Length: 165
Image (tube, rainbow, N blue to C red; front, side, top):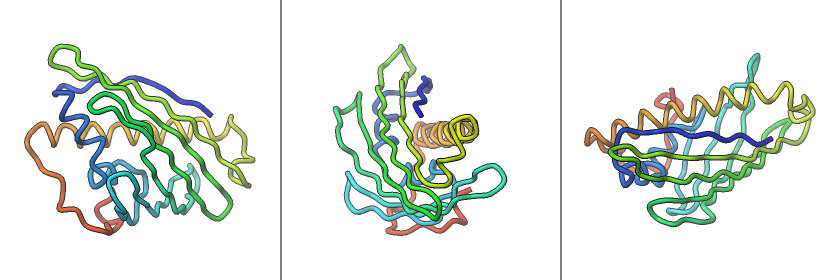
């Protein structure tokens, strides 16, 4: 299932790039994150309890940044496993300046296998769209905080679900 869109931020492209490439800040955008561990600047892991409408799906997800061209492009692969589902996602974004704004064009290709995946695209599409909206809204909040001069929390190897919401 492919999803794509565009988002604008009222801040410099460098600020948006820094947020998108800061694992500690990105952890705050993941739906249902319970723990987050940074391996290095290109690889990290998360344990999430992802909301799926009537229930949720606990997944262990590995993230790998596979390509980047600072301050304009990056590509990320994610692989997740949980009871009833195996998830694979490839996502990328392109940043460009438009006056005082930064535009981000993004796309993601999400594949879900197993019993959860067998629900079909018609059922999963609105759930994926809602989660994407949640991620983008959380990203917007992180960019605004960075633009105001707020700093990311001290990088900790693990974060609890209490700060996830």
